[in-house]
Image (tube, rainbow, N blue to C red):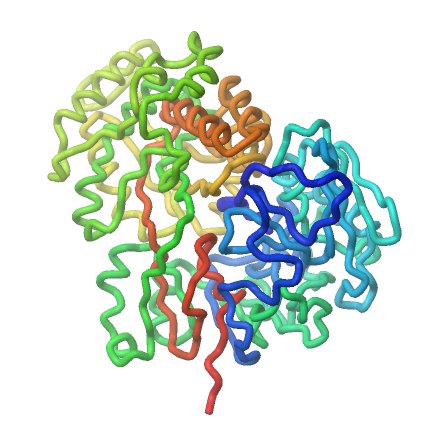
Length: 594
């Protein structure tokens, strides 16, 4: 299933035998589970069905169409839709047939076929047909959110080639992940959409084929899904032990702190806690002490990607990399981690943190070969140094770092006059806005703002509601903001959406920094075409070095565990999957009531 911040797991595909129909395809070697497998290892195949799962969402929503740029889509809409394939959460990237019973990849990797299951049905009982697959691809890439167009840009055609078969043809065979990520495409019913405008927001309940349907909704405030007892795929091995709740409900809250209090009061059942201070201080309540609420730290092997203060280089102020680098020296991570986060985090120094893809050593010979064509356009340190974030003694004011920041700003044409930093040519004072929607981040931002003030920079913190925040990011209407770009075990097509020139000029993409660098564009294409794992690692590291050298982000931090709290009416399998977020809607279940 596609995700905008977070992310798609991608690895390098080995050749399949010519004309071979497979139950699954893996990027490395063979799938873990054979054609006769009964269920995934991370599920409880005997999990009881029933009960209600209550979850939270932040802000509001104004649409049940989750495939377009317009509007804010309701939480949980993916529960309504099946995809051609399903990726196992205990493998880096293997796709198993879901709507498709079999996959055939051309020997030269210039096409992929999917053969649909006879029993696959939409909720109105009509069969899922190849025509629906063709319609879905065309609708998503031509009228849907821009990420679909970027994600499947190398597909040249899609057509029905048999009663239950559809083929996707590619520009060439170099995009080695493309057959697998096409399997992640949700299949929409052509007969439902033919008389409707796909580009419009709507509160009309759409038609899907997945395990849940919308039961009811309170526009902008709550939405409830019910498990379809006649779901066509309920007995498939890929679904055994999954989708156990009869009802899943999302209630919307103004912000995360309000939601936390509601959780402690029993208003909903599960919380993924991403605020370290709250994890250490906010759960000292009777429900935790007496065991009604459980707290766990679940280890994972997900690459952590990059979180940080992202600067919008579309703004004149942030076009100069020396200005961007200077702003990094004003952030005191060591003080922040010790005083606000109880030392819970590790500083991020890569766009692929917590993985072998991070450029944490000097460039290898293969990386240097990739970087050499851009030597004249890249900073010399890309070739000779490992990127390091500025460090401090953790006391909150690092005069040495501020002096370095001041020197960089002076070199960029910004001098101090009185107490203000002004441009030497125009006299314009240096000021910008930091856009936020989560009040909990104010305590991180305000010490940073004070350090900026010491440099003569005026930074205003602007707090908006989540809906306004989402809309402003879609239009790139901000100066600086806190943002997260998730990564996978093996990055690929999604990098276009994150960093390419095309994405920089397309509203709604994840290239919120506005990065447009020919070196980055070319390295993305080389990464996508990596012929094996070793090449992919080298190409990811080369891309990492170039992105880091641009100083587009003031890096934050990452963790290697998920912090979860849940009421003891929920249960989950003993062995969590290695990848992805905790799959509470997927493989957890409600404890049977006596």
